[in-house]
Figure 1 (cartoon, rainbow, N blue to C red):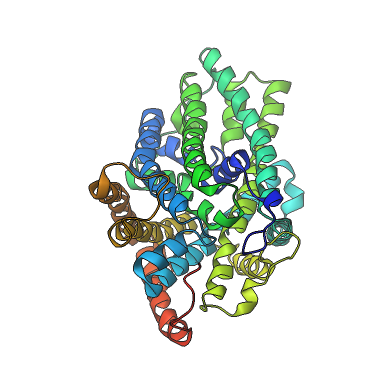
Figure 2: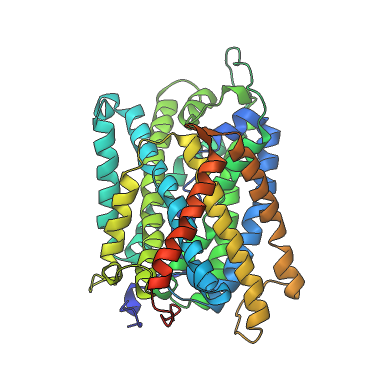
Length: 448
């Protein structure tokens, strides 16, 4: 048993952690359609090659060093807390949890949308909202089984999810040009929107760190899981798009949530096309379910650890004795996420990337600060290049967040824009700390 009561037999091993991280970050090629539509095949592939180099690779390197050096539950929150102090540790958790409210409203919406494609009557009217709420509730209950159960289910869901895309990729790569009518006119190119969608599709590497005390041999497992998942995510994005591009299907024929229609256009009309399109639609539902489960697992650990540090009431630290899962934190997070199910998709992505991106910048700052403050800290994996390397890998993500802020400034949210709303939420985090942080004990343990 660990200090938090997680039995050794229930810990995550390498393959389940890879599968869970895949869902945390990706959940499959869903969401890439708009990049192809607005950027064309060459532009989409270029964006999907550049984004991991500028965004995912620096983040996975940072996570690999910090997760192996400080393998504590709470992950990135504990890194920032240890490196920069209680104020910044609280802001890290605030930004992550606030961003999660926008992010976690996306997956129930996607689940309902894909279900509606298969069974329109099932999601008519108010049924869609109730199905979304039930979806969040089932994920919360599932998470009470513990991290190992989520990891194992992620392996199964991931295998089933990627199977129809493997079939589509192989068929498209081996087939000739597709027949089809005139293509719709291509929309106006929006480079920044494409980059932001790609960032969202490559975001979440740090989330896997919050369950560090529920991972077997974390010092070795995290670096291997980060590298393996980064390769898997990139290949599962680029290969299907490149294969479809080889068929000559116009990029303007793509649409949001349109993978099933792409399959119908690529395959000859008949039973096989119908089956594959149906399988891809079902895979969309599995993607939403797997991502919801994995993110519920990692995000719910934040309130639990914050309660142990005195920032939240101790009730949030209560755990299910059999699995060690923080059941109060899980149910509280699920309730908060269920309240945001009706927000528009684009605005959800914009705000999520802005707030979560800022929290990731704090993690890069923690990487540098720990190099300076604790040079003798055991680091089973170390970002190469010394201190300069630790600083240098944070520059590309910083530039991308600046672009994100520019794009958010142009996105209206009611009477203000998304950047102004983000600034208000950030300010609320500072104000909340002044109320909560001062009342919490200055001697509270730093998640040790």
